[in-house]
Image (cartoon, rainbow, N blue to C red):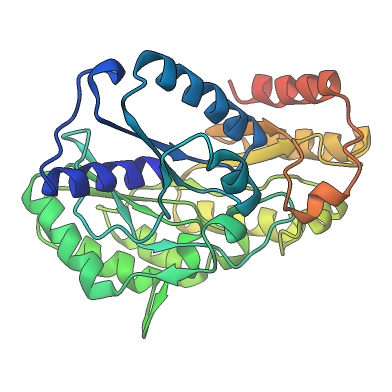
Length: 316
Protein backbone atom coordinates (compact mmCIF):
# COMPACT_ATOMS: atom_id res chain seq x y z
CA UNK A 1 0.00 0.00 0.00
CA UNK A 2 2.80 2.45 0.85
CA UNK A 3 4.56 1.68 -2.43
CA UNK A 4 1.35 2.39 -4.32
CA UNK A 5 0.82 5.63 -2.41
CA UNK A 6 4.38 6.69 -3.25
CA UNK A 7 3.82 6.02 -6.95
CA UNK A 8 0.62 8.06 -6.97
CA UNK A 9 2.22 10.86 -4.99
CA UNK A 10 5.06 10.98 -7.52
CA UNK A 11 2.54 11.24 -10.34
CA UNK A 12 0.65 14.01 -8.55
CA UNK A 13 3.86 15.99 -8.05
CA UNK A 14 4.85 15.60 -11.70
CA UNK A 15 1.42 16.93 -12.70
CA UNK A 16 2.45 20.08 -10.78
CA UNK A 17 5.74 20.22 -12.76
CA UNK A 18 7.98 18.78 -10.07
CA UNK A 19 10.80 16.59 -11.40
CA UNK A 20 12.63 13.74 -9.59
CA UNK A 21 15.97 14.73 -8.07
CA UNK A 22 18.95 12.50 -8.69
CA UNK A 23 19.99 12.55 -5.04
CA UNK A 24 18.94 13.97 -1.68
CA UNK A 25 21.49 16.79 -1.63
CA UNK A 26 20.11 18.33 -4.85
CA UNK A 27 16.41 18.05 -3.95
CA UNK A 28 14.20 21.04 -3.21
CA UNK A 29 11.50 18.83 -1.70
CA UNK A 30 11.92 15.54 0.18
CA UNK A 31 8.87 13.47 1.15
CA UNK A 32 9.02 10.57 3.59
CA UNK A 33 6.08 8.18 3.23
CA UNK A 34 5.78 6.58 6.65
CA UNK A 35 4.42 3.18 7.62
CA UNK A 36 3.89 3.17 11.37
CA UNK A 37 2.54 -0.36 11.76
CA UNK A 38 5.76 -1.14 13.65
CA UNK A 39 7.36 1.13 16.22
CA UNK A 40 10.78 0.32 14.74
CA UNK A 41 9.69 1.92 11.44
CA UNK A 42 8.73 5.14 13.23
CA UNK A 43 12.05 5.12 15.09
CA UNK A 44 13.89 4.97 11.75
CA UNK A 45 12.05 8.10 10.63
CA UNK A 46 13.79 10.15 13.33
CA UNK A 47 17.16 8.92 12.08
CA UNK A 48 16.20 9.55 8.45
CA UNK A 49 15.15 13.13 9.19
CA UNK A 50 18.57 13.80 10.73
CA UNK A 51 20.36 12.33 7.72
CA UNK A 52 18.32 14.42 5.26
CA UNK A 53 18.78 17.65 7.25
CA UNK A 54 22.53 17.01 7.37
CA UNK A 55 22.81 16.24 3.64
CA UNK A 56 20.54 19.08 2.48
CA UNK A 57 19.61 21.73 5.07
CA UNK A 58 17.74 23.85 2.49
CA UNK A 59 15.33 21.12 1.32
CA UNK A 60 11.70 21.33 2.36
CA UNK A 61 10.94 18.15 4.31
CA UNK A 62 7.44 16.63 4.35
CA UNK A 63 6.02 13.58 6.12
CA UNK A 64 3.00 11.64 4.93
CA UNK A 65 1.60 8.13 5.24
CA UNK A 66 0.29 6.12 8.17
CA UNK A 67 0.94 8.19 11.29
CA UNK A 68 -0.66 8.03 14.70
CA UNK A 69 -1.67 11.34 16.28
CA UNK A 70 1.00 11.08 18.96
CA UNK A 71 3.69 10.43 16.34
CA UNK A 72 2.55 13.46 14.34
CA UNK A 73 2.78 15.56 17.49
CA UNK A 74 6.33 14.41 18.17
CA UNK A 75 7.52 14.81 14.58
CA UNK A 76 5.79 18.01 13.50
CA UNK A 77 8.53 20.26 14.90
CA UNK A 78 11.22 18.36 12.99
CA UNK A 79 9.69 18.71 9.52
CA UNK A 80 8.22 21.52 7.46
CA UNK A 81 4.82 19.93 6.86
CA UNK A 82 2.83 16.78 7.49
CA UNK A 83 0.43 15.83 4.70
CA UNK A 84 -2.55 13.55 5.35
CA UNK A 85 -2.49 10.40 3.27
CA UNK A 86 -5.74 10.58 1.36
CA UNK A 87 -7.21 8.79 -1.63
CA UNK A 88 -4.70 9.99 -4.21
CA UNK A 89 -6.49 10.59 -7.50
CA UNK A 90 -3.42 10.77 -9.74
CA UNK A 91 -2.68 7.72 -11.85
CA UNK A 92 0.45 5.98 -10.54
CA UNK A 93 3.95 6.80 -11.71
CA UNK A 94 4.73 3.06 -11.85
CA UNK A 95 8.31 2.16 -11.10
CA UNK A 96 8.13 -1.10 -13.03
CA UNK A 97 7.09 -1.63 -16.64
CA UNK A 98 5.71 -5.04 -15.70
CA UNK A 99 3.68 -4.60 -12.51
CA UNK A 100 1.18 -1.96 -11.46
CA UNK A 101 -0.41 -1.50 -8.03
CA UNK A 102 -4.11 -0.67 -8.03
CA UNK A 103 -5.68 0.30 -4.67
CA UNK A 104 -9.34 -0.68 -4.51
CA UNK A 105 -9.98 0.27 -0.91
CA UNK A 106 -8.32 1.74 2.14
CA UNK A 107 -8.73 1.52 5.90
CA UNK A 108 -9.85 -1.40 8.02
CA UNK A 109 -12.77 -2.36 10.27
CA UNK A 110 -11.21 -5.43 11.87
CA UNK A 111 -9.29 -3.83 14.76
CA UNK A 112 -6.83 -6.68 15.28
CA UNK A 113 -5.44 -6.02 18.73
CA UNK A 114 -1.84 -5.59 17.55
CA UNK A 115 -2.55 -3.33 14.54
CA UNK A 116 -2.70 0.47 14.21
CA UNK A 117 -4.12 0.60 10.67
CA UNK A 118 -7.72 1.48 11.71
CA UNK A 119 -6.28 4.40 13.70
CA UNK A 120 -3.93 5.67 10.96
CA UNK A 121 -5.99 5.01 7.82
CA UNK A 122 -9.45 5.00 9.34
CA UNK A 123 -12.43 2.77 8.61
CA UNK A 124 -12.89 0.86 5.37
CA UNK A 125 -13.60 2.89 2.27
CA UNK A 126 -14.08 1.16 -1.11
CA UNK A 127 -13.39 3.07 -4.30
CA UNK A 128 -16.26 3.11 -6.82
CA UNK A 129 -16.06 0.12 -9.14
CA UNK A 130 -16.35 2.16 -12.40
CA UNK A 131 -13.33 4.21 -11.31
CA UNK A 132 -11.29 1.04 -10.65
CA UNK A 133 -12.33 -0.51 -13.98
CA UNK A 134 -11.31 2.64 -15.87
CA UNK A 135 -7.92 2.65 -14.21
CA UNK A 136 -7.44 -1.09 -14.83
CA UNK A 137 -8.26 -0.62 -18.54
CA UNK A 138 -5.74 2.22 -18.74
CA UNK A 139 -3.02 0.05 -17.16
CA UNK A 140 -3.82 -2.85 -19.49
CA UNK A 141 -3.70 -0.48 -22.48
CA UNK A 142 -0.21 0.53 -21.33
CA UNK A 143 0.71 -3.19 -21.43
CA UNK A 144 1.39 -3.78 -17.75
CA UNK A 145 1.69 -7.52 -17.34
CA UNK A 146 0.56 -7.76 -13.73
CA UNK A 147 -2.05 -5.70 -11.90
CA UNK A 148 -2.08 -6.16 -8.13
CA UNK A 149 -5.27 -5.05 -6.36
CA UNK A 150 -4.54 -3.55 -2.96
CA UNK A 151 -6.42 -3.14 0.29
CA UNK A 152 -5.97 -3.81 3.98
CA UNK A 153 -8.69 -6.45 3.49
CA UNK A 154 -9.59 -6.76 -0.19
CA UNK A 155 -12.16 -9.48 0.59
CA UNK A 156 -14.45 -6.95 2.24
CA UNK A 157 -14.51 -4.63 -0.79
CA UNK A 158 -18.07 -3.38 -1.42
CA UNK A 159 -19.24 -0.64 -3.78
CA UNK A 160 -23.01 -0.52 -4.16
CA UNK A 161 -23.94 -4.04 -5.38
CA UNK A 162 -20.41 -4.99 -6.41
CA UNK A 163 -18.42 -7.10 -3.94
CA UNK A 164 -14.83 -8.25 -4.35
CA UNK A 165 -15.55 -11.47 -6.31
CA UNK A 166 -17.70 -9.50 -8.76
CA UNK A 167 -15.03 -6.80 -9.12
CA UNK A 168 -12.37 -9.43 -9.70
CA UNK A 169 -14.50 -11.08 -12.38
CA UNK A 170 -15.17 -7.74 -14.09
CA UNK A 171 -11.46 -6.93 -14.30
CA UNK A 172 -10.61 -10.42 -15.54
CA UNK A 173 -13.07 -9.95 -18.42
CA UNK A 174 -11.24 -6.90 -19.76
CA UNK A 175 -9.56 -7.87 -23.07
CA UNK A 176 -5.78 -8.14 -22.98
CA UNK A 177 -2.86 -10.25 -21.83
CA UNK A 178 -2.35 -9.62 -18.12
CA UNK A 179 -2.47 -11.29 -14.72
CA UNK A 180 -4.40 -10.15 -11.65
CA UNK A 181 -3.05 -10.53 -8.14
CA UNK A 182 -4.48 -9.18 -4.88
CA UNK A 183 -3.41 -8.59 -1.28
CA UNK A 184 -4.32 -8.89 1.50
CA UNK A 185 -7.10 -11.38 2.27
CA UNK A 186 -8.66 -12.02 5.66
CA UNK A 187 -9.61 -15.65 6.45
CA UNK A 188 -12.96 -14.68 7.94
CA UNK A 189 -14.01 -13.01 4.68
CA UNK A 190 -12.66 -15.56 2.16
CA UNK A 191 -15.95 -16.62 0.61
CA UNK A 192 -16.95 -19.59 -1.54
CA UNK A 193 -17.89 -17.09 -4.25
CA UNK A 194 -14.37 -15.65 -4.26
CA UNK A 195 -12.72 -19.07 -4.38
CA UNK A 196 -14.94 -20.03 -7.33
CA UNK A 197 -14.12 -16.83 -9.27
CA UNK A 198 -10.38 -17.41 -8.77
CA UNK A 199 -10.70 -20.98 -10.02
CA UNK A 200 -12.59 -20.00 -13.16
CA UNK A 201 -10.22 -17.42 -14.66
CA UNK A 202 -6.78 -17.99 -16.15
CA UNK A 203 -6.04 -14.31 -15.64
CA UNK A 204 -6.38 -14.46 -11.84
CA UNK A 205 -3.24 -15.60 -10.05
CA UNK A 206 -3.51 -18.80 -8.05
CA UNK A 207 -1.06 -17.38 -5.49
CA UNK A 208 -3.21 -16.67 -2.44
CA UNK A 209 -1.87 -14.80 0.56
CA UNK A 210 -3.92 -15.73 3.63
CA UNK A 211 -2.48 -14.53 6.96
CA UNK A 212 -3.04 -16.94 9.86
CA UNK A 213 -0.92 -15.05 12.47
CA UNK A 214 -1.20 -17.89 15.03
CA UNK A 215 -2.47 -21.46 15.13
CA UNK A 216 -3.71 -21.26 18.72
CA UNK A 217 -7.33 -20.30 19.35
CA UNK A 218 -6.63 -18.48 22.61
CA UNK A 219 -3.96 -16.35 20.96
CA UNK A 220 -6.20 -15.73 17.95
CA UNK A 221 -8.92 -14.51 20.31
CA UNK A 222 -6.48 -12.15 22.04
CA UNK A 223 -5.44 -10.92 18.60
CA UNK A 224 -9.15 -10.32 17.78
CA UNK A 225 -8.78 -12.18 14.48
CA UNK A 226 -12.40 -13.33 14.25
CA UNK A 227 -11.82 -16.99 13.29
CA UNK A 228 -10.60 -20.25 14.82
CA UNK A 229 -7.78 -22.42 13.59
CA UNK A 230 -10.38 -25.05 12.69
CA UNK A 231 -12.03 -22.56 10.33
CA UNK A 232 -8.65 -21.70 8.80
CA UNK A 233 -7.76 -25.34 8.14
CA UNK A 234 -11.14 -26.03 6.51
CA UNK A 235 -10.66 -22.95 4.36
CA UNK A 236 -7.25 -24.14 3.15
CA UNK A 237 -8.66 -27.57 2.31
CA UNK A 238 -11.52 -25.96 0.38
CA UNK A 239 -9.15 -23.71 -1.58
CA UNK A 240 -6.91 -26.63 -2.53
CA UNK A 241 -9.87 -28.77 -3.51
CA UNK A 242 -11.41 -26.10 -5.77
CA UNK A 243 -8.07 -24.66 -6.95
CA UNK A 244 -5.62 -27.61 -7.04
CA UNK A 245 -2.78 -25.42 -8.32
CA UNK A 246 -3.17 -22.87 -5.49
CA UNK A 247 0.03 -21.70 -3.83
CA UNK A 248 -0.66 -20.33 -0.37
CA UNK A 249 1.49 -17.94 1.63
CA UNK A 250 0.83 -16.52 5.07
CA UNK A 251 1.79 -14.09 7.84
CA UNK A 252 2.72 -15.27 11.33
CA UNK A 253 3.39 -13.36 14.53
CA UNK A 254 5.50 -15.12 17.15
CA UNK A 255 5.94 -14.11 20.77
CA UNK A 256 2.54 -12.46 21.18
CA UNK A 257 1.94 -11.56 24.86
CA UNK A 258 1.41 -14.69 27.00
CA UNK A 259 2.13 -17.10 24.11
CA UNK A 260 3.32 -20.30 25.79
CA UNK A 261 5.68 -22.84 24.26
CA UNK A 262 2.72 -25.16 23.72
CA UNK A 263 0.77 -22.43 21.93
CA UNK A 264 3.79 -21.70 19.76
CA UNK A 265 4.09 -25.40 18.93
CA UNK A 266 0.52 -25.29 17.64
CA UNK A 267 1.76 -22.81 15.04
CA UNK A 268 4.79 -24.97 14.27
CA UNK A 269 2.49 -27.95 13.72
CA UNK A 270 0.22 -25.94 11.42
CA UNK A 271 3.17 -24.81 9.29
CA UNK A 272 4.26 -28.44 8.93
CA UNK A 273 0.72 -29.52 8.06
CA UNK A 274 -0.21 -26.78 5.57
CA UNK A 275 3.17 -26.55 3.79
CA UNK A 276 3.01 -22.87 2.87
CA UNK A 277 4.81 -21.64 -0.19
CA UNK A 278 6.08 -18.73 1.88
CA UNK A 279 5.63 -17.33 5.37
CA UNK A 280 6.31 -13.76 6.47
CA UNK A 281 7.21 -14.10 10.13
CA UNK A 282 7.33 -11.19 12.56
CA UNK A 283 8.36 -11.11 16.20
CA UNK A 284 5.66 -9.30 18.17
CA UNK A 285 6.50 -5.75 19.21
CA UNK A 286 4.19 -3.58 21.26
CA UNK A 287 2.67 -0.57 19.56
CA UNK A 288 1.15 2.44 21.32
CA UNK A 289 -2.51 2.93 20.52
CA UNK A 290 -3.35 -0.76 20.10
CA UNK A 291 -5.30 -2.84 22.60
CA UNK A 292 -2.49 -5.42 22.72
CA UNK A 293 -0.23 -2.69 24.10
CA UNK A 294 -2.13 -3.05 27.38
CA UNK A 295 -0.90 -6.64 27.67
CA UNK A 296 2.43 -7.45 29.27
CA UNK A 297 5.06 -8.09 26.60
CA UNK A 298 6.40 -11.07 28.52
CA UNK A 299 8.32 -13.01 25.85
CA UNK A 300 12.03 -12.17 25.78
CA UNK A 301 13.64 -10.82 22.58
CA UNK A 302 15.92 -13.88 22.40
CA UNK A 303 12.95 -16.24 22.67
CA UNK A 304 11.10 -14.33 19.97
CA UNK A 305 14.13 -14.65 17.71
CA UNK A 306 14.28 -18.39 18.37
CA UNK A 307 10.61 -18.85 17.55
CA UNK A 308 10.92 -16.75 14.39
CA UNK A 309 13.94 -18.73 13.26
CA UNK A 310 12.12 -22.01 13.94
CA UNK A 311 9.21 -21.06 11.66
CA UNK A 312 11.44 -19.66 8.92
CA UNK A 313 13.48 -22.87 8.87
CA UNK A 314 10.29 -24.82 8.14
CA UNK A 315 9.39 -22.82 5.02
CA UNK A 316 12.80 -22.56 3.35
